[in-house]
Image (cartoon, rainbow, N blue to C red):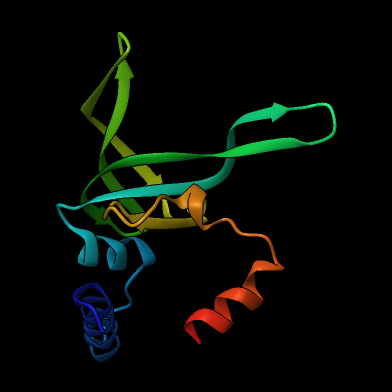
Length: 128
Protein backbone atom coordinates (compact mmCIF):
# COMPACT_ATOMS: atom_id res chain seq x y z
CA UNK A 1 0.00 0.00 0.00
CA UNK A 2 1.46 3.37 -0.98
CA UNK A 3 1.38 6.49 1.21
CA UNK A 4 -1.56 8.10 -0.62
CA UNK A 5 -3.66 4.94 -0.28
CA UNK A 6 -2.83 4.86 3.44
CA UNK A 7 -3.75 8.54 3.84
CA UNK A 8 -7.09 7.95 2.09
CA UNK A 9 -7.91 4.97 4.31
CA UNK A 10 -6.83 6.83 7.46
CA UNK A 11 -9.01 9.81 6.49
CA UNK A 12 -11.98 7.51 5.81
CA UNK A 13 -11.53 5.93 9.23
CA UNK A 14 -11.16 9.33 10.93
CA UNK A 15 -14.28 10.70 9.23
CA UNK A 16 -16.26 7.53 10.04
CA UNK A 17 -15.28 7.74 13.73
CA UNK A 18 -16.25 11.41 13.96
CA UNK A 19 -19.91 12.05 14.75
CA UNK A 20 -20.01 15.14 12.53
CA UNK A 21 -21.21 14.71 8.94
CA UNK A 22 -18.39 15.41 6.47
CA UNK A 23 -18.79 16.42 2.85
CA UNK A 24 -16.90 15.16 -0.17
CA UNK A 25 -15.21 18.56 -0.49
CA UNK A 26 -13.95 18.32 3.11
CA UNK A 27 -12.73 14.78 2.44
CA UNK A 28 -10.82 15.91 -0.66
CA UNK A 29 -9.34 18.90 1.17
CA UNK A 30 -8.27 16.66 4.06
CA UNK A 31 -6.36 14.37 1.73
CA UNK A 32 -4.94 16.82 -0.80
CA UNK A 33 -4.39 20.03 1.20
CA UNK A 34 -1.55 22.05 -0.39
CA UNK A 35 -1.19 19.52 -3.22
CA UNK A 36 -1.95 19.89 -6.92
CA UNK A 37 -4.95 18.07 -8.32
CA UNK A 38 -6.79 17.99 -11.61
CA UNK A 39 -10.58 17.99 -11.60
CA UNK A 40 -12.81 16.71 -14.39
CA UNK A 41 -16.35 18.08 -14.41
CA UNK A 42 -17.68 16.15 -17.40
CA UNK A 43 -17.12 18.65 -20.20
CA UNK A 44 -14.91 18.42 -23.25
CA UNK A 45 -12.22 20.98 -23.85
CA UNK A 46 -12.02 20.19 -27.54
CA UNK A 47 -13.67 17.85 -30.06
CA UNK A 48 -11.37 16.91 -32.91
CA UNK A 49 -13.31 15.48 -35.85
CA UNK A 50 -11.77 13.42 -38.59
CA UNK A 51 -13.45 11.90 -41.60
CA UNK A 52 -14.45 8.65 -39.93
CA UNK A 53 -14.12 9.33 -36.21
CA UNK A 54 -13.83 12.07 -33.63
CA UNK A 55 -11.83 12.44 -30.44
CA UNK A 56 -12.97 14.36 -27.39
CA UNK A 57 -10.44 15.82 -24.99
CA UNK A 58 -11.77 16.11 -21.44
CA UNK A 59 -11.70 19.54 -19.86
CA UNK A 60 -9.94 19.66 -16.51
CA UNK A 61 -9.17 22.29 -13.94
CA UNK A 62 -5.78 22.13 -12.27
CA UNK A 63 -4.71 23.78 -9.06
CA UNK A 64 -3.48 23.52 -5.50
CA UNK A 65 -6.06 22.59 -2.86
CA UNK A 66 -6.59 25.44 -0.41
CA UNK A 67 -9.42 23.99 1.66
CA UNK A 68 -13.15 23.39 1.78
CA UNK A 69 -16.25 24.95 3.22
CA UNK A 70 -19.17 22.55 3.50
CA UNK A 71 -19.80 21.34 -0.10
CA UNK A 72 -17.40 23.82 -1.72
CA UNK A 73 -13.85 22.83 -2.63
CA UNK A 74 -11.47 25.78 -2.90
CA UNK A 75 -8.38 25.63 -5.09
CA UNK A 76 -5.73 28.06 -6.25
CA UNK A 77 -6.23 27.33 -9.94
CA UNK A 78 -3.88 27.47 -12.89
CA UNK A 79 -4.93 29.68 -15.76
CA UNK A 80 -3.57 31.11 -19.00
CA UNK A 81 -2.79 34.83 -19.27
CA UNK A 82 -0.93 36.28 -22.26
CA UNK A 83 -0.06 32.73 -23.40
CA UNK A 84 1.63 31.99 -20.07
CA UNK A 85 0.52 29.57 -17.36
CA UNK A 86 -0.10 31.28 -14.05
CA UNK A 87 -1.32 30.15 -10.65
CA UNK A 88 -3.45 31.92 -8.09
CA UNK A 89 -6.95 32.33 -9.47
CA UNK A 90 -9.18 31.25 -6.59
CA UNK A 91 -11.77 28.76 -7.75
CA UNK A 92 -14.78 27.65 -5.75
CA UNK A 93 -16.10 24.31 -7.02
CA UNK A 94 -19.32 22.68 -5.93
CA UNK A 95 -18.61 19.09 -4.98
CA UNK A 96 -21.69 18.12 -7.00
CA UNK A 97 -19.97 19.30 -10.19
CA UNK A 98 -16.95 17.03 -9.72
CA UNK A 99 -17.05 13.88 -11.81
CA UNK A 100 -13.57 12.76 -10.87
CA UNK A 101 -10.27 14.12 -9.67
CA UNK A 102 -6.73 12.93 -9.48
CA UNK A 103 -3.53 14.11 -7.84
CA UNK A 104 -0.91 15.60 -10.13
CA UNK A 105 1.72 13.03 -9.32
CA UNK A 106 3.57 12.22 -12.53
CA UNK A 107 1.61 9.00 -13.08
CA UNK A 108 -0.42 10.19 -16.04
CA UNK A 109 -3.34 12.56 -16.28
CA UNK A 110 -7.10 12.07 -16.19
CA UNK A 111 -7.21 11.90 -19.97
CA UNK A 112 -4.94 8.82 -19.79
CA UNK A 113 -7.43 7.08 -17.51
CA UNK A 114 -10.21 6.97 -20.11
CA UNK A 115 -9.88 3.47 -21.52
CA UNK A 116 -11.87 1.32 -23.88
CA UNK A 117 -14.01 -1.34 -22.25
CA UNK A 118 -12.13 -4.11 -24.03
CA UNK A 119 -8.88 -2.97 -22.35
CA UNK A 120 -10.15 -4.12 -18.96
CA UNK A 121 -9.51 -7.81 -19.64
CA UNK A 122 -5.85 -7.11 -20.43
CA UNK A 123 -5.53 -4.96 -17.31
CA UNK A 124 -6.98 -7.69 -15.10
CA UNK A 125 -4.66 -10.30 -16.66
CA UNK A 126 -1.58 -8.13 -16.20
CA UNK A 127 -2.22 -6.79 -12.71
CA UNK A 128 -4.78 -9.18 -11.25
